[in-house]
Image (cartoon, rainbow, N blue to C red; front, top):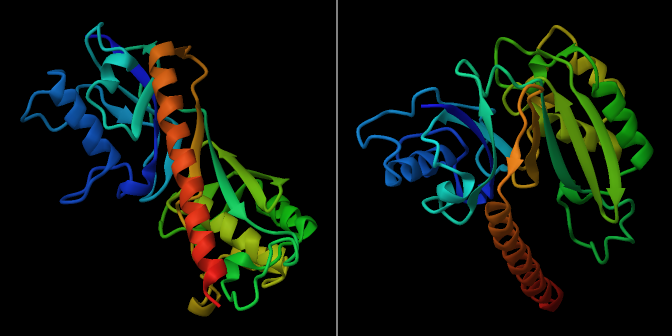
Length: 287
């Protein structure tokens, strides 16, 4: 059967990450279950022939352009795929690929976006009296962007990942402000575990003044940071795998599948705005 690559979008908040794990729901489990429901994957098969994915997003992380490739029959379009996928996972584009294509190894770059709540000053954030959460401290944009620049380029990020090998990476970080949010875009050929979330966490600490810019140089040092100076990952829910670049593939958008995805995620946007209003009423009313 031919090899085909699919662009897959998903809301990761209800899953324990992308990669299969025992006894918990994952995005990959849902994909394999859909393939079994379509009789593309045998019930007792471990995984499809030629299968690989662009990345292993953490629990709670969402995706716009996760990419999975596998050997499939000609009739398996994104629209057909969606007939068996749950509503919060949508295939929306596909590309024919060479027989030796590998969705992990052949990716030229990956781009993540992080939607960081980072009010420029506390007055703009409303009544924050009594809020001690470090994630809601005022962020100075100039300091934050200086941190992004310092964190960009080729470095050994061993202090920003639980991985103990292959920790040298060359990310590029950029930040754009929209109201109380900074959208942080991080691009690299590949990422160590939790690296994006720890990059954002360190940049936020520099941006709030909780840490000096010199902390970044110490992080790049050869010695491990002592426990009290370690950088914890930022929360996973604001992170999205936004793009994966394959120079040799031309993806065709499946109009019906894309329309389905837009409708489903627009409904989720409305539901979460409504939930925000409910939470706001309660927060404002507890006096």
